[in-house]
Amino acid sequence: MRFPPQRKIPATYMRGGTSKGVFFRLQDLPPEAQAPGPARDALLLRVIGSPDPYGKHTDGMGGATSSTSKVVIISPSTQSGHAVDYLYGQVPIEGAFIDWSGNCGNLSSAVGPFAIANGLVDPARVTRDGICTVRIWQANIHKTIVAHVPMTDGEVQETGDFELDGVTFPAAEIALEFLDPADEGDGEGGGAMFPTGNPIDDLDVPGVGVFRATMINAGVPVVFVEAAALGYDGTELQGAINEDKVALAKLEAIRAQGAVRMGLVADAAAAAKRPLTPKVAFVAPPKDYMSSSGKPVKAGDIDLLARAM
Image (cartoon, rainbow, N blue to C red):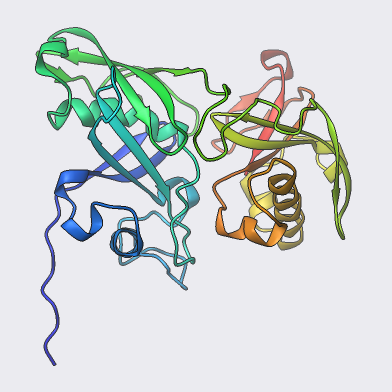
């Protein structure tokens, strides 16, 4: 039996914030994958290693978590006043589809460095030393992001002393500006900051209960509920949620009903096809707790506890 040959596609594996993903220049993708559609999705699914019934991503570039199962496509911008277009895809670990419905705020910080390093920014606008400003068009949600990228000797400065909770080693800091993230836009999921028109709603979730919820769309749609309503105090770590199948089912039901109320999907069943958006989060007043790295966090040092899924 004759098998098709392997394909060589230039790509870059990058961390941005607390996420990692595989970055491509649009022009480097095979012709059939340069436009949205099944061919593109099939290629990128295989790059990540999904769908993987083992949940390991052993045969792919994914990291078997939602934070490390991501793809990014960068191209010269189609928008005036922008350097690049940035398209983001969330790849489910066991699902055979890619969710293109929203943005990744973490990987947004890697777009500027990738664009500079790959010659996608006008050389006349690239600072040799100091800060290079890169205007990015976020193509999923049709918004502008401005990245401030540190430069040394004409190259992106990657090392530094900026520390970020959730990341083991320090690196260079890249500041981002998200311009008008909640204005009336024409991107999917765009619209007012409060899509329901209310800062607080009663969200009736069939089979689960009624929850006071705040549904916000600012960069990425999120359904916020009170931790106490779920039986939590806000200090829970990943294991307390991820290993509780009953809790996960309840949170997914809340998320799906929130998606309907926000006008993102026609019915709750459709929410399963867009796990990226909306996110669901629970919040609580400050309280002492121990972080997943073993670092103590004092109530007096924070204003709010939040856990987002």
